[in-house]
Length: 238
Image: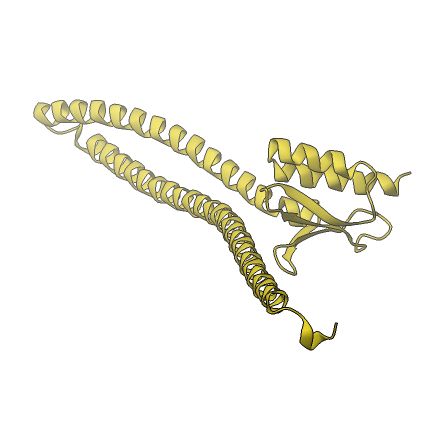
């Protein structure tokens, strides 16, 4: 039987099947498009959240540094005021000593003034001791903050750089004492399930998977950096 002799019902079924196949294909493309859009939106949100956390940490450190500098300036200003008061006390004492030879009233005034001077001197001495202690504490905290801020770059020789997409490259130098500029690095990202994932590591670390697993359990990224650096350094001394 030729194609022209086929029953009309067969041709109609083929047309319906073709339409159904076309509709299914359109639905599939739409679902793929929606899934891709949701994934890209989630990745962008994750990226923004990470950037905000990094910016917030940096702002907090800068704010703390500014606060400590302000306290140090304030302590210096207070010290100057106390020194001026001390000079005033000395001047008052000298004036009292000059009037002691005058009348009894002046003598009584002198004795009263000397008592005031003793109280003020004691207060000034106490304030000076407190000021010195505060100044020392402020200076120590400022030094500790500066050391903590410079610790990663100066002592650990670490630098962080964003590369393609949501990837963060963490590079170390000062690992090999014979080649302090030699670069050891790894690349990390936060995946779709909010877990850290290392995509590259040069040179390779044998127990890197265990280190990443521990990072995802503790969420202590700074400790992870120190541990990875130690692993790189151990390779030099093998």
